[in-house]
Length: 161
Image (cartoon, rainbow, N blue to C red; front, side, top):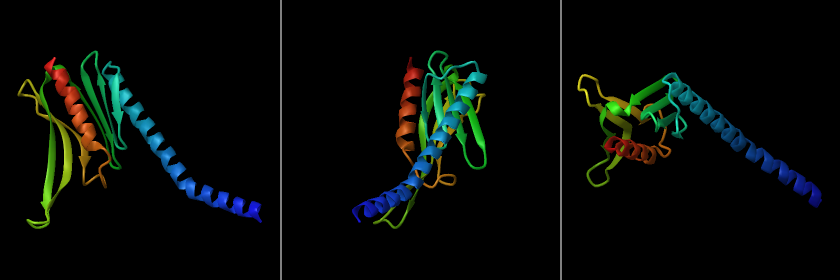
């Protein structure tokens, strides 16, 4: 009787764990594809990424030797590959677009969009933004605020030197 209960328990645990295992494998596969995509973009510009970070929908990387920044984002509808030579950049800042909901007493802000915004030294070049989060494309945030602040600091430190 105890052996039968143990077998049934093991089967239920295995059935319960399978969806999580499949989700984890799918996530790792997607991260691997994003990493390969950003490496390909860098390779097309004769660069090698030495520092990178990957989220579920995007990857960002830096060639510290040539001072180039790369961004690759893949959504259901499109793929976006962006590249910036940091030697041409005047400033980098985090742009948070949000809106308030509720009344004056119980209002809270909801973030609609998070951009890493770049202004060029040459004003003829239009500003560029790397979109880390867009509420119309994503259901919720998963560390994007910390990532965008980290990369803003990395880029601004490189712009100072």
